Image 1 (cartoon, rainbow, N blue to C red):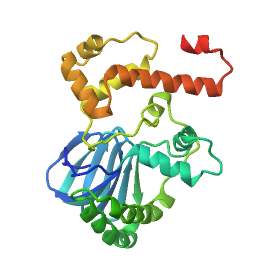
Image 2: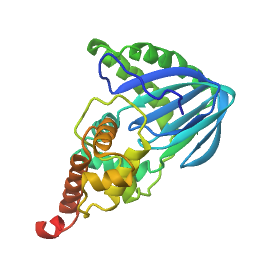
Image 3: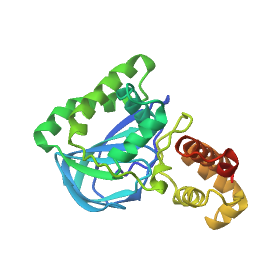
Image 4: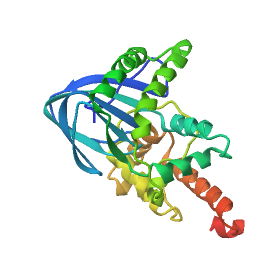
Length: 273
């Protein structure tokens, strides 16, 4: 829920925070990161793959990576948005439960099981929201030009203070995600994301490959399906996921193979098929 379609920082950081006021409708967009949106003033009607929800002061919207969300302000809305790298989130969950987890895949499974909803609206109330405001303002100031390394721990401490207020109110479930949802949150090799909205063509191409891992995809075939040239597809895909379409497909296949090796007794030849 942000009219901000792209922003750059001087140096990479897994946490970027922006505060702004919007008066016009915001078309549904998705980001390849986790988003926390704290409503500070005004209100809006949210829309997306989760349906429609009214939000106002004291509400926090939590969006999983790759979740479409748009908004229709009621006159206007001021909100602070936290963009958090999804691999960074996975790492924090892993260390939080290090005594019971073996590797980062266990952290992913934990998130899939307990936080399966792609979007939640949490009512923390105006009093709790007031507690968050100084932390949010400092986070936004630190991330304006990219927090320098020597201020990263301060930024992380502020983020954890915000999460300490918000996460206890997050709905927890015991229902795992569908396979197509799970593949969007598997950890990848860290990269310097710029927190840009995902192009619809990139989402469509990734979805096609996830749904048919066994298919012998070619770049030309994927490009034709998304009405892009092969060069355009490569550029759009690298911007969205940090790798070429075929490299992304290989990553999905390897991750699926690793999962089958750890959860079944199948021989490698059968898994490879």
